[in-house]
Length: 346
Image 1: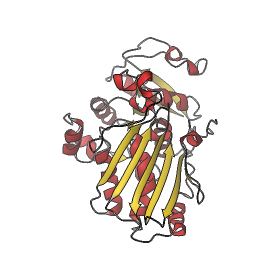
Image 2: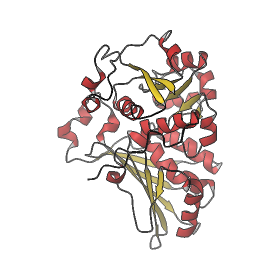
Image 3: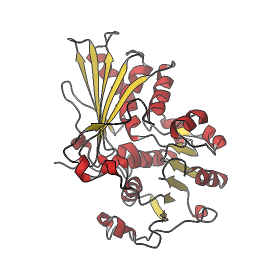
Image 4: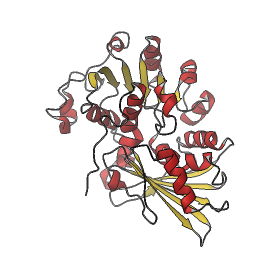
């Protein structure tokens, strides 16, 4: 049994972490941190956890509360995790950060894309990128894990094996992703008002979305050469889910069975990546509320293109679920411990 704490516990990702950890047999939640809701019963904020999570929120003291935990989850916006991470590491504890603060290996690139100074560059050197199925051993040995972003998770799980094995081109990769509104978080804004999201589909952040350097960093690592992608995210009128459709010229003449074999070699023993059958394609409803990533592939001979489609729940596999999966690796628990929920349908 380990003790964990969550800072930023009342955002959507914090809520998912709390829901998942409340069902984990090897975990005790020591504290749920929130400045905005300090002293409030957690189930008043998340009524789905009534009679399941009885704790009240607290506003932590980072000099004291971190002594109580074996692992800290940081579910704060970018730029706000760095001081907490430094304190935890100095105390010899482990931490999983769900912000962008430790995902990019180059602090200057982080500062360029996020517009804030990086104040934990020494800790950044120690961070392991937490794509669970790819960096399994590194995560198991890590003290600090940088949990991937939601869009990157849906994209990297699809592309990393194919680039690593050299079966696809590194140039001309086009990615079209659609996300549910929960990806924007709980803070109200004009962009996520019901009246403007319902019955509406819109592109945003074309060419400038902050997940681009994260995607390119990891794809370049797979290909061992610089990879540049065209990435367009869209906001879809649904609560949860990400569907990514990726287009690549099939100039290397990859055959379906070759692609299937590569995915099987990377993910055949992994419980959360499901490669679908030929002419079967992912849908967000089929992964709703779960830690699954579904992947389907089409070789379009007419256009000589390879089309890859993936689906995840942005709050689970794209955030909290992958964080729990990484925790399981770090503490040598079963990889699916606390993550065995079946998708909700319809």
